[in-house]
Image 1: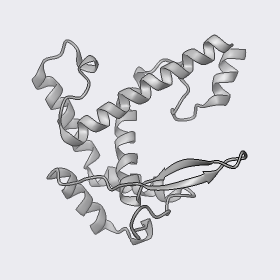
Image 2 (image 1 turned 120 degrees about the vertical axis):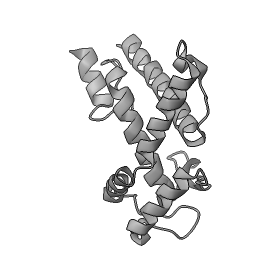
Image 3 (image 1 turned 135 degrees about the horizontal axis):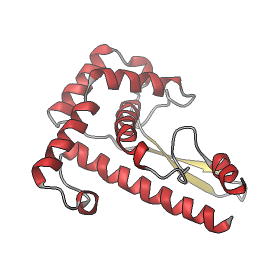
Length: 173
């Protein structure tokens, strides 16, 4: 059981790092992780990145991402500024799409808060602004569409309809 759990944790770390490096590469249109694309020529990689980026900046994906973020309990939490999801409109989504398209979009700094722990210390928590949450959701959605079918069925971390409980059920039978 312990070995299987460690394997799942290691797979989750790898999966998370792969997705994070792809997100970074998408925003800046650069190659970030050579091992991901070993054996493919540069033009193919560049075209694939462009296609992924085109999906992320699609207003329909951004609108869907907005709806998903706004459904969540903490979706309307303020980041550094006073902006909330309540102030979002179609124009805001189109504006974000344009700024992604012309590469002028930059993530804003996150708000750091301390969550009290039982031992009296505080656990640091970063809260991004609503605009950044929507973009992150759009990136996660597009990357999930690409990578989800490539993941092992033994990976349970940060996957749709999977988690700790499904991992335990898999291991215990």
